[in-house]
Structure formats: C-alpha cells, structure tokens
Length: 181
Image (cartoon, rainbow, N blue to C red; front, side, top):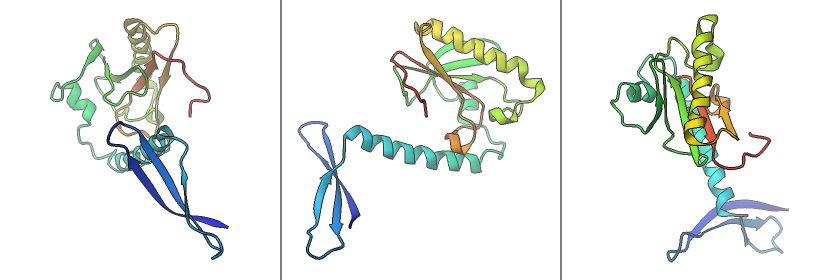
C-alpha cells in the first residue's frame, strides 16, 4: 500500500502553467518512491481556495458578535472604495473583489439591524429581505443577465460566510452548474 508523503508544486517560468505532483512512497521496501501528477491547475487552485475560504469563515464567525464595523459597513460609509452597481436608500450593490463568475455583485442592506446572517432574520426584517431580492433582480437587469443568474446567501461558517453582514451574491454571465455546492 502506498502513502502520500508530500506535495510539490512546479511553476514553468516561461508561462503561467502550474504542474502539481503528489509524492507517493510505498510502504513495501521493494517498491520505489514516485511522483504522480495532480489532475489540473484548476483543481489545485480550487482545493487551496476552499481551504482558505473555510479558514476565513471560521475566523469571521469567531469575531461575528464583536460589534465592530464590517468591511461592508466601511463600504457603505465610503471609507473603502467599491464599484457600485446599484444603490437606493436601503440597499447597496457592488462588484465582488474576488468574482466567481463574469458577473458577481454583492447586495447588502445599508443598515444591519441585527441581520448579520439569514438565521437571525426576524419578522421585522421581512421588508428589507424583500428589498434585497428585488435589488438582486435590478442588478441582473443592469448587468444584462436576466435570462440566467443565481442568488446565493451563505449562512454561517459551514456555508463559508466570511462577512457577518447579511449579503446576497448575484452571479451570472456564464452557464451555471448544478448541484451548486
């Protein structure tokens, strides 16, 4: 039986090609150590990004109830620049800085009112929840993706929520796959 003992990453300086290999060492002394290429750069990046996302979500969850302003509060206050797609008196929509699709816009309420994640929604939040969904439709219209877009809400660390200010992701501009997760 062979065991994976290490992981190697080689970059070709002449291009952006990345080759990844797993070192496999046999437990039987009659077999030798060898390298197996990983499937692709894309799968390597996905694994790395997933681990980073999960770690960031756990850190964010640990600090969720600190009461400190979130990055979204700072964007609303115009302390941090953003590429605004849509804004009204209650909702702000801006481009995600790490897009997962050709169109990736975040839609947030301008006032958190305790709505840090969807599981904290109360009857008093019904109006703003509806306004967020309506704003997602307006964003899709502005971005020219009304014929196909996805709205995602991450709730809690197991869903990789990384900012505890309720927000919707509006994704589109390419064929979406299913299942989503």
